[in-house]
Length: 459
Image (cartoon, rainbow, N blue to C red; front, side, top):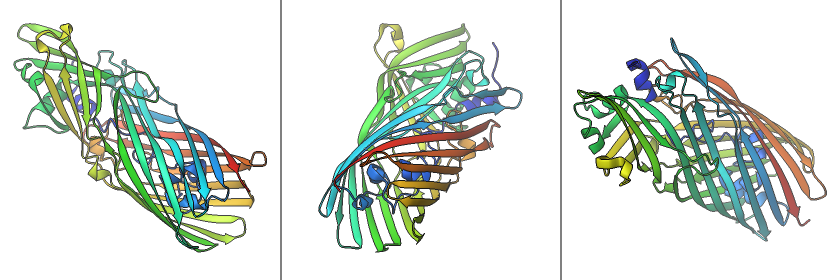
């Protein structure tokens, strides 16, 4: 049987995170809402419409009309590839993900309240089984993750200078995963004297004693672009403040709590294992339950400023601190074979895997320039930078969220007497990163678009 070199085998098993979004500030998107994204992701001190609960809920008080409705659609366009010397390169076939969003807010005197539904992000890679990632067995590798939020925001004008706001969020997450792992990688996880990329245990491994694993293949996917096969839900909260020094200068700050999500679970998972024993080579396929434990979205702190140096011109800037290290230390997955007849005597056996992540906290810098010659008309440009939080030794081609720099732009146009049409584009510049331990090169660039229609009520 053809052996995959140990170098490749270890690399394939280094799952960076089945919860990683194809955002480009780690798991985060570079911006939320058409205005914020066009301005490099800055949004803590400006009106971003019903994206305010994500950016800073206190900015809802900047709404001038009685009520506002936003309808938006975003397209994520990742361009991802993986390469290894002597084994060629392969492009990911997953190059388009769509995220709808909507929100409604209403002003009542000194308060604004509403509801917003946003796709927090989407990601995915898909590599053909004929590539070196398929272990020479034709095993396709893919991942797809979706995270969404239903946000209930409220904001209050304390006085002419200060506004405060908050949001309670219902959060859900879904995951699809098809991952090939070599026998050498599986043995590395099980051997306490090795465990370079993580560790594994369970009765399924014990049952393989005396046999040499050749490969393992994990498969749970439903093909739905919005709700993955393994699902979980929970909640989070945001709190923001806005201080207007004068009409030309405004400062905002916001705290987003980490999420409290349940385990992502499915009862329709499959694990295939091939092994060589003194009796010869054999393969078995098991069906059962999978649980991904403690996948969470991190806490974030942000401060932002808006300054008007001249009529019609605004400069905005944000600095965000994202606490990845508190939620992305390890990826934990467990599998339990159910009592299906096809499982035979293996029913009830389990496999637990912990794959190291060791993400760093991340500082994100956003800056933008807006020219608005008249009401509901604007032209925008921005820049966003954040170093990748992923340690290179744990980087995996299934999850190469490594873009660090973005150029953004967009505009707003009047649409009827009480409506606007806004759009943004974000170019994530190509970044190539080499796994320093195993030599696989991951390349990631991205082109995202968002369009939004806004309807206003009141004068």
